[in-house]
Length: 289
Ligand SMILES: Nc1ncnc2c1ncn2[C@@H]1O[C@H](COP(=O)(O)OP(=O)(O)OP(=O)(O)O)[C@@H](O)[C@H]1O
Image (cartoon, protein in one colour):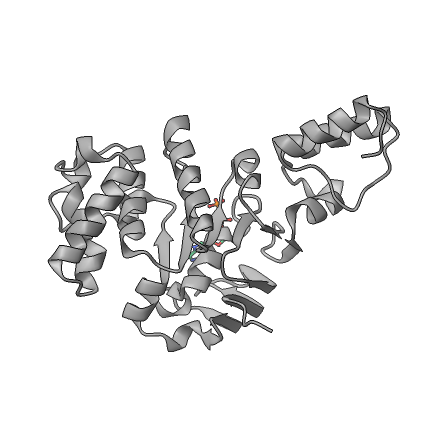
C-alpha cells in the first residue's frame, strides 16, 4: 500500500489564551496528485487547518496541538524549514501577508523564495520568466509590489509559490481579491497542477468552480469538528439540511428536481454543471438517473 502524502490523525488544536478547541477530530488522508477542497462557514477553522498542515502551528502560533500530521510518512515537525518551504507552497488568504517587503520589483519578489532556498541566479531567472509568462504578468514585471492592486498582489503571491515548484500547494481563498478573469486563471493553474500530479488543498467559497477540480471534499462544522470527508458526489448526497451548508448549484437543482420527478435519494448527487446536464438529459429521455 502506498503511503498517503498527507495524513492527519486525531488533530485538535486550541489557540493560546482561548478556552476551547478551534478544530478537533480531524482525520483524513490525501494521496499524491489529489485535489482537496475545504469548506465550512466563516470561523469554522479552515485557515487554522491549513496552518496546521503547513507546520505553522504550533511553531509560529503556539497553543495546544494534539494528534499528528504526517507528510510522506514523516511528522511535519521533523522537517526543517527549508525542506518544508520546498515541499509545501502556501498561498495566504491575504496577499498582503505574502509580500516580502524587501524587494522593489515584482520580478525580484517572485524570485525571492528561490533566492532564500539558495538557488543559482540562472535557475531563478528561468523559473521567474516561466511563471511571469504563465500568469501574463509582463505588464507589471518591474512595478513595486506595494503599488499593486489586491488582485495583482494575489497573482504575484501565487507566482512566487509556483516558481518554487513544491509538491504540495495550499491555497487559502486564492481568488478572494480577483475578478472573474483572474479567478479563471487561478483555476486553470490548479487544473495544470493536477495534470502535473501535484497535490493541492484549496479553501474556496466559489463552490461551483471548485467542484470542477476537487477529488476530495472536507466539510468542517461550525465548531471546527470534521463533518464529512470523501468524494464530493458521495458526501454531498448525505448533507444534513440542518447543517446550513452552501451547496453547489448542480446539487441544489437536483434537490429541487427530486420531488417533481419522484427521484429517490441516491448514493451520489450531481456536483458539476456537466453532472446536472447529464442528469436532466437522462430525465428527458425518461431514463433512470
Ligand atoms: N491567532 C488566533 N488566536 C485566537 N483565535 C484565533 C486566532 N486565529 C483565528 N482564531 C479563531 O479561530 C477560529 C477559526 O478561524 P479560522 O480563520 O481558522 O476560520 P476560517 O474558517 O478560515 O474563517 P474564514 O472563512 O472567515 O476565513 C475563529 O473563531 C477565529 O476567530
